[in-house]
Amino acid sequence: MPEMIKKCPECASINLFWNREKGEVICKDCGLVIEDKMVDHGQEWREFDPESGERKRRTGAPMTYTQYDQGLGTEVGHTGDLFKLKSKDRNKFFRLRKWQSRISTAIERNLKLALAELKRVSSYLKLPKSVEEESARIYTLAVQRGLVRGRSMESVVAGALYAACRRHDVPRTLDELSEASGIEKKEIGRTYRFVTRELGISIMPSNPADYIARFASALKLSAEAQSKSVEILEAAQKAELTSGRGPTGIAAAALYVSALINGEKRTQREVADVAGVTEVTIRNRYKELLEKLKLDKDVKKTKKRKK
Image 1 (cartoon, rainbow, N blue to C red):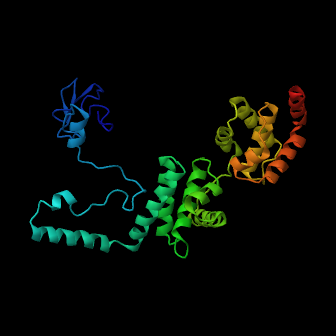
Image 2: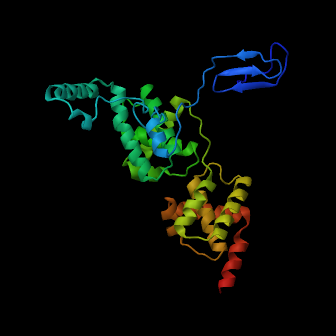
Image 3: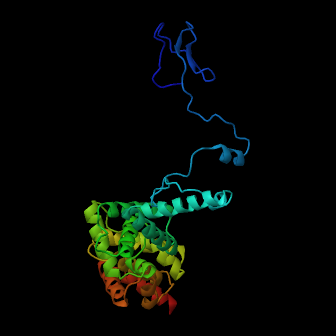
């Protein structure tokens, strides 16, 4: 029933009938035809199996920023169709296809190359589609604002990916992005800050708890050690030990402490390699957690039990 028609204008009845086949709205009490020749926006075919439905639909794939034309562009002829033509017409279509690629703007040419690199890095880091889509949108905006000029395409792609990861709470470090893209960590951080500032993208500080699951899985720690490390992090946040410190370092230190308490000892070197930080960082954060949260008693108890 159309939302605008709520009651009959003749008898004020709300007992209305919508005849979908004739496109009419009729009052059941007085018989007045309130609306006629209504457009049916539903599909005009029936589907008996998925293949027939796919064949009869006249819409394409949804719009996406991961393609330079957002998936709305068309191409002159397909290779299979072209060889059905005569040689004269075939040459004509080959020329048209060549000119179609040449006529594209500088922005489109840039996006073709950059989005291919973005998909490669995203696949390497095993990022979800939502992050890939968001990073492609950020890069497209950066190109349209002229922010790529004077900077390498790869560094802006890496900066856009890092910004999208931060927005979607997908924990990926600058070291991982640097390894995947081949760009220096400092350059990615610099480009990331520049792009987010120029585009007005607000990003909350990274939460150390987001890294716990990944690090714990890599270190093969139990669920108890993982939940204990989250508790330690929550206590550290209340004690204001996390502000001004790197999220990966504090997360790694919390895991190191929880592993000691649960009797699943891991060396500082092992934890540092997984988290991508130095042993000195873990040692400093570890000492802070023991002193401020008074966890040294729990660690000592575990050591005594082992003896």
